[in-house]
Image (cartoon, rainbow, N blue to C red; front, side):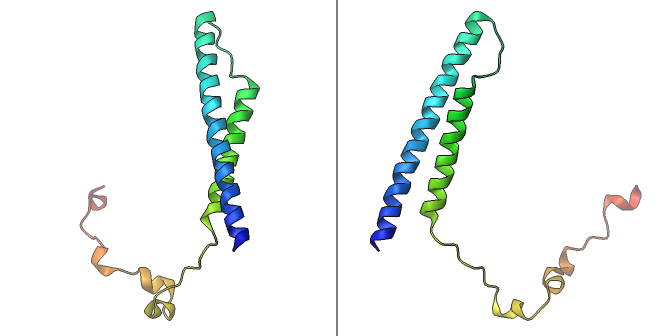
Length: 104
């Protein structure tokens, strides 16, 4: 169980680092926009801001996956396990014959 506790702590640190990187890239982008507006130059954002934003996003995604745990299988209901999928999706109450396609 100590391994799972360590993994949770590492994923928490990873998430905090991702949030810090995302916040810093947001502040850097705001400063760049203000500079671009003041100098009237409409260049694309600097590469370091883009890389920082992508790195923060990747850290956050990895932290979420690390904290989510193992995935569970989806089990169908016992009555549905014996029937084919087409029979399960057939719902005659939702079939409409009086619709605007008849007049088109």
